[in-house]
Length: 510
Image (cartoon, rainbow, N blue to C red; front, side):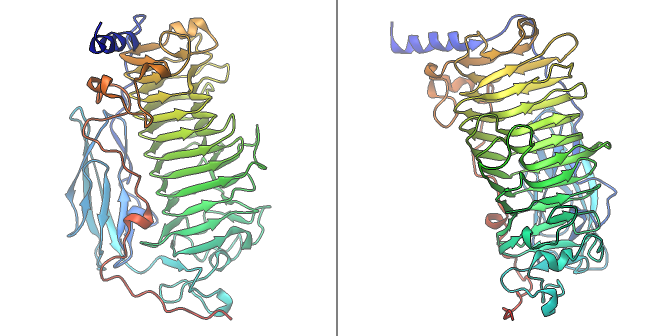
């Protein structure tokens, strides 16, 4: 037999199409999570500083991915990336009237949805902090552009000080230490909703927030919380940021979270770079976009979530997780309508995507992700022995770790796999394992491309090899015509704006 014939024979062998039942991905309404209409200037989308680049993303869930974005009304100079929804306005100009903006999103099925909002360009409602050239309050720093603060205590003051409520806080380059903040409720930086909750990296600069010996606690309903372009590091007290699940309209964008040491965390600790803490009230409209999580050297999470609804986790990267039972993305309890899409996960061991299932877990869509594991589970659904709702896996590529579905019994599910690529050493024909044979037999699936690591389906980068090129764009995470790129960062993609105000002159520290 010729080599070419053998390749075609192998391709036919590794394409696993389960005949028990055909998968039907759950269809959710096309919806824009951010921006939302009818918000105030306490929301990041609704306010800009003159001369500093306005840079935001439209966050969309539901419908049929991928989407096409267009501006249907906008001020002069504003542009949108048609494939990612990133909006840039390099040089906002102050005026008394607001600027109207309208965006329309079209999904791959032709459905459309639009949102309208306004932007006020003003110097009012902004504060600046500069670890290098700023002044402390004692030295006369007032947080203005020309006279920025120097340290976290300068704007935090104490737990009850509400003077800076709803201010947008621009962080300039340098290192800021949460351990310098006063101890409130046993935590060094207990940030309530009377403090600034919009934290922005100054364009072209990379501020670092070091949480050694403490962590950032965002307590209460932190509505409109927004973090963009920051590096948060050294989670020696189990967390980088701990934020209440009762919050609405929350976004983490283009941040880097790094270094959870091996001497913290552990089973049951919920150690995590970002933990959405369980509250009685369920928050909604969250987005995690283009963040990087790296250096988890203990049993911990990148993103851990409780009690939230309508959450988008998109285009994030997770690397250097080195301990068994560490998890990149972990929606845990009482979560619904989570859309885990287009992320890149490369872990030595642990769980890439871990959907812990309780009776309130439902409507979880996992799509277009590339998950590469040394060991452990690329996807684990249903660890808890309770009835849970719909979980859909669509067009993902899972490599190395197992794909495991447990406790799929009774009225649980359905759990479906649609056009995924699964490459691992499992002995099952579809490379999916679990603790219940009856549950595995009820999994919905169609058009899976599966095989062992020796099958030659994928290369070291996780892409389909030449022998399987005919499946690019129809199986796994790869989309035809899309080039892989590093997610945007605030420093790399926010150059100093044209005609921006001159930075303050260096100030001698006494």
